[in-house]
Image (tube, rainbow, N blue to C red):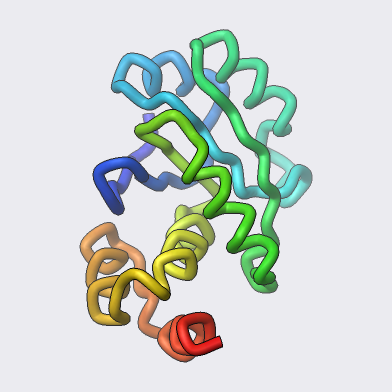
Length: 142
């Protein structure tokens, strides 16, 4: 199984999951899986349909929210926030490396947490979001 990084009590992130990971994730206590990776991003990645079927078979909720990591829009941030807010927890979000999911989480937290807390939380999980500070400020200050 892949390495899972915890961001909060209710949200963790991971790199690419495989259908065969779903049963173990359910056993580990996760309730919802969010896939932030667009289908076809890489030749070897399983499709969202395959992942959804495996999640359902394991008793997990599954949300597909494809986001292009180099072009995260405000609608992507708001969509991620809505999914996480409504999801049964704990939630595990995944993408190619986990950075995209961590970035989405960070941007949803811009109004609730200061930059140091956001960057530090991401850093503890192994993700460097220091380059995101100006975007966090923009989101916070409108």
